[in-house]
Length: 404
Image 1 (cartoon, rainbow, N blue to C red):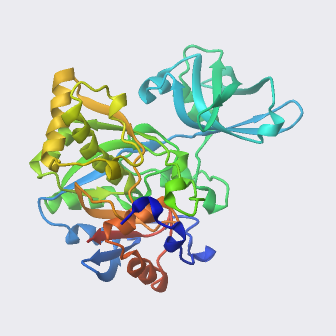
Image 2 (image 1 turned 90 degrees about the horizontal axis):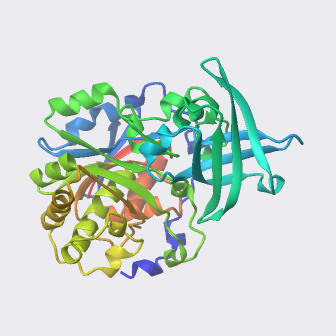
Image 3 (image 1 turned 90 degrees about the vertical axis):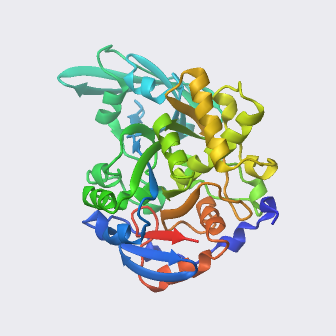
């Protein structure tokens, strides 16, 4: 199959608005679970997920945490300006960014840009009894957004604290509603740890501490990695063929322990969510690149959109992951920090992911292409079943376990 010439219109389906879950159900793990196994479909409740998994398998979760990435300013004219944080540019490291005091810079999207042609934006607020002023200055267009400098008049207050105070959690645009206080809890996974995403890895929203314990009881090995989900995850495919769609870049962090655990499990994993899929599959191509470029920088290990389709990859997954581990050893690193732009679509051959837990995705989306590739094109069987059996769709909707 010539992946680049896939017509996105072939991945359309009718999604009535009433099937889009605007809010989550009250108990996360009581959502419905569609089970697709070798072409057969059935349904259950999510808390029974461990019953379907092979004992001794490795399950991989994305532990990213959604930040309150929307900041609203009001100009003296009364105009409302929204600054939406996309990714840090100074410093570029997420951990350092949230620890900064007094100054930092982000790549941002700007709402009502025509009302902010020049000058600075100000917002006054209070943290722990201290009055602060946050100032935003737009420098220039930068990549897919705008470079915005932020500064504030208190060197004892971190940018993380500022976002917690004045930021708003960015729920998906297709929910067509304002963020509510409850979203601060329900739009985070129970295992979220590392701040940086502007959208949740929604397949993980169904897990509870109870289900995680049940996985342990069933002998399922658990590991975590980090991919910070960007706003590009909602970017629609507007080109007729997917060759014309530019995938967004997302930043990943994978620790040595996770790589070692992959080797222990013959580089076979159950991925929780498409973000875990994209990270695990990208690791393979990083390992392939290292075979030819052992002295590459972490930045050079970036996996491009079409890398899998343009690479004659002769390595086994075990060999590739061993290359990544050796790279960490040579450079004295405890974790790999890099990025991926990978697009997974029909024609892609999965290397590491053998089972997938995921929600139901938008029509004509790159996430639907990923699912189709995973089930060898049989995605309509899954989606027709979900539509005819009252499943709830998208971020706050129900879940599926896919076993090709």
